[in-house]
Length: 124
Image 1: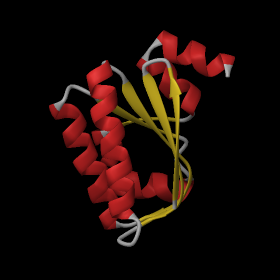
Image 2 (image 1 turned 135 degrees about the horizontal axis):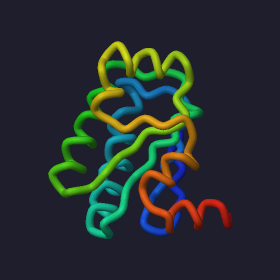
Image 3 (image 1 turned 90 degrees about the vertical axis):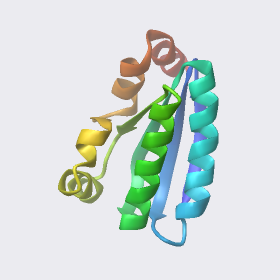
Image 4 (image 1 turned 180 degrees about the vertical axis):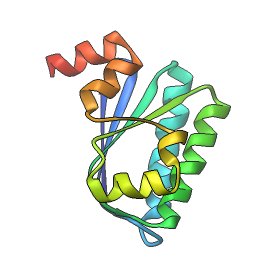
């Protein structure tokens, strides 16, 4: 699994590719929590670009839940974008689509965070 961060104004897009399971969850959680703390301090948001995520296990879902709780406790936001059909089904079955704001594209997710983030994305 790989996680690639990109900053657009006050938002960070984390592009996740591969499989999120017991073997990769700890590294993902550490990377995600680092950005949760930073964006919460900056008053920004995180967009999880899950277009490259092929599989998520219950351990991966736990990582998402812990990050959501951490972000909310620090008045931060995490949005999810570009879910692959299988991952979208897992999100729906587990009701994670009710925990996270899920949007079809990264562009739409950035637009939901701030106009500055969307403008920076469109310039890139």
